[in-house]
Amino acid sequence: MGRARSALAVRASKESLCDAVLKAFSVKKDVAETFDEFDDVIDFCRAQSEELGGKAGYDAWYIWRVGDWAILGDLSLRLGQNPDVLARLSDGLGEVIFASVDAFSGDACFAVYAQGRTRRLLMLEDDEVIEEGFPIPAEHGHFMDEFGDEELERLWTSYGLPTLEVDPSNGPFDCVAFSIE
Image (cartoon, rainbow, N blue to C red):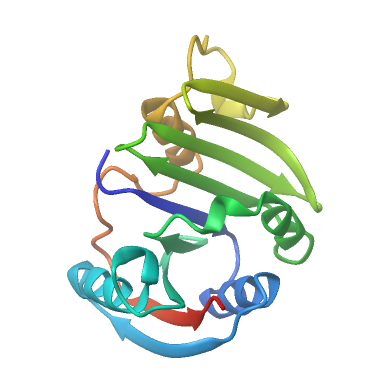
C-alpha cells in the first residue's frame, strides 16, 4: 500500500458529496482550490492539515470523480473516526463505501453503509479483526482467513473504484480545508 489514507465513495455529484460531508461533520469550508495534479493536492493537504504538520486546528480533504462515483479522500485518516456520521450520510446520499488503510500501523477498514446503517464492516485494528454485517458480493466464494490491506483493496476495487495503492492520477481534484476546532 502507498501512503496512509481514507476515502469514501458515493454515486452523487462532487458538490453534493462535499456539502453533505461538511454538514455531517459540522465543519465549514475555509479554503477551496482545484488542482489537476495529485502532487499539488498533497501539498495543499499538508499545508492545511494539523495532522500532517500544517495549519493548527485545520484539516483538508480532496474530492474527484471516477465514472459514476464521487470520491472524497482524506490523508489524515479523520474520516473513519466517527462511523455513525458515515452511516448517517447514507440516508441522504445513498450507499456509502468507505476504506481506510495505514500501512505503518497495519490498520485497515472497509465498510458499506446504506439507509443510515452499517451494512458491512471489516476492520483490522491492533492485530484484531472486527467483522459486522453481511458479506458483500465480492466476498462470495472467497475464504477470508484474515483481513488486511490486500483484502481491503480487493473489496474497494470490486465497486469499480480506483486502487488505493497508488495516488490517483486523473483530476481535477477539488480540495477543501476547514477548521476542526
